[in-house]
Image 1 (cartoon, rainbow, N blue to C red):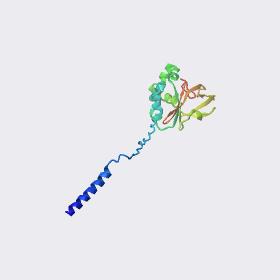
Image 2 (tube, rainbow, N blue to C red):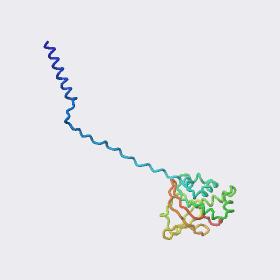
Image 3 (cartoon, rainbow, N blue to C red):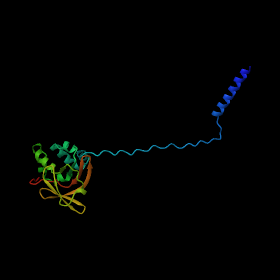
Image 4 (cartoon, helix red, strand yellow):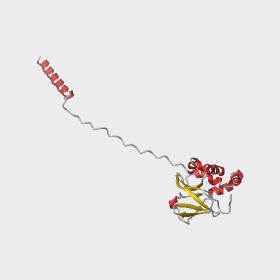
Amino acid sequence: MRRHQWNALILAVTLGLLGAACGDSGNETVAVSPPTPLPTPAPTPAPLPNIVELAVATPDLSTLVFALQQAGLVDTLSGPGPFTVFAPINSAFEALPPENLNAALLPENVGLLTDVLTYHVVSGAAVFAGDLTNGQQITTVEGSILTVSIQGDSVRLIDGTERVINVIATDIEASNGVVHLIDQVLLPPGLSL
């Protein structure tokens, strides 16, 4: 019997300790800190389009895009570059005599069209407006020279026929270079359209 009493005592003490450990004292305050918010990742900037994608997305360059397609220059100007493109806006093409423009866009005149278009391109460098200096001479992919004229904030180009062309928008960045919009079609030396 003594053994039975002893087991009952051990059971009572064990249950008492267990109850005390699990019980609610009611007097304890537990400080809970608010959850730490995770840092918000910075939005990933959209990748820049290449020069051709930029031109396609610019309504005022639709004639240039068509000319690039006719001359087979789309793949070149979609390539790694870097390139600087002096891009004539649609009204620059519209200012050309229609018969000359139409003739230049014919498949049999692709060589002439390529010469005119590559006269608008500098390869191997993305030349921003701030990099240009007055009187600077730039060699184009076509092989002829453009001369830079800077007056105040105005940037102009003097083409191979000594015409002065206004740069009307500068430093439009692309993944493979930079584009500057111009108000006339540049003509290499000895060429007229």
